[in-house]
Image 1 (cartoon, one colour):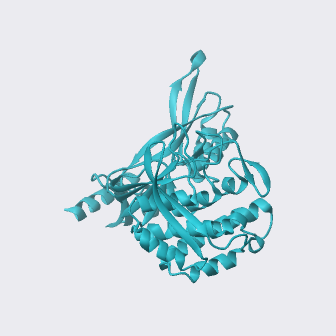
Image 2 (tube, rainbow, N blue to C red):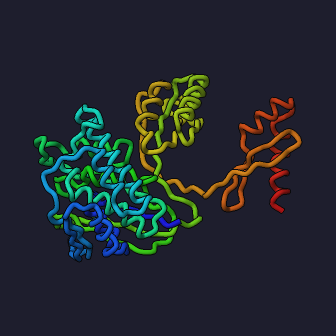
Image 3 (cartoon, rainbow, N blue to C red):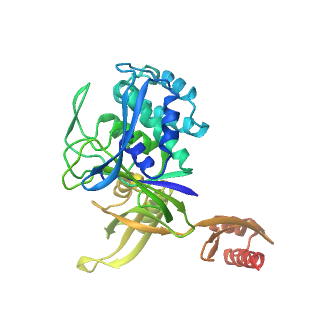
Length: 385
């Protein structure tokens, strides 16, 4: 699978995204031809430049219709009538819908009444459509992204001076990992946030892959000490173990009953925790206690941390990021004398019968659980010979 990984260490905007993809190998001539089919009268400049010593590509929209405020149906009609390939049209439309939903929520109006102001201008339509078309030109099948540098300070909008990230950007990036580093200005724009939030299937470290090309898209300004570029890495996904970022939530507990802790474990798993463990330990004043450790997706971190404090007696938790290596896994089904059991298999050859299947058959057949597990393991090993 060919993937694109956006490394947004200096933020992301629409023009930076197009520039990075062209720099990574997307055909600039075909890209411009596709954008001209929108009939906006705009011209497009693609030029090499440098940002803090890094060679990058700058994409710029020149002229065209100005001052027009468009509603979502008008923009979707423009996309549908263009010469872009089907999937590029679908992705561009999805990005604009996501952006429209964020604007509607921020301003408290129905989606169909949202005026797309700046993002309805020719340059933003070209940025979003151009990014989606460039991904198609590169043959990208899946998009991934790093955490996004949103910047800091304030930004001037037609609604006045607003804090960074702007309201629409903040709404688009709910549940996504962000940080602030560098100059006090907007580094991630609503258009860039909409592209990342809509197209990226996951945020975090780059998946295991073989890099084919790297491209750098230039922002408008050149910062001292920080390259104002977005990096796009085009790569072939490999079958090696995947590296992902997870949040670890911990609490030392010495004043809670086993029943309460067991219930808390059940609730955490029900609410999406990747794993929950309870480890006995000797604590201060020679009290026996346990370490509760929860492994969570970053997007679930705050919700699960609150759940720990609500369902246990702890008054605080520790939260930190960790790297998780995950093997490619598949599920196969084997037949046993008691019924079918799913088997989880790993790329290194390991396997494990699905506990819930084995437990259900043990109860239904009135036999020990260990016997069902043994039969399932035997059936799987026999099928692989």
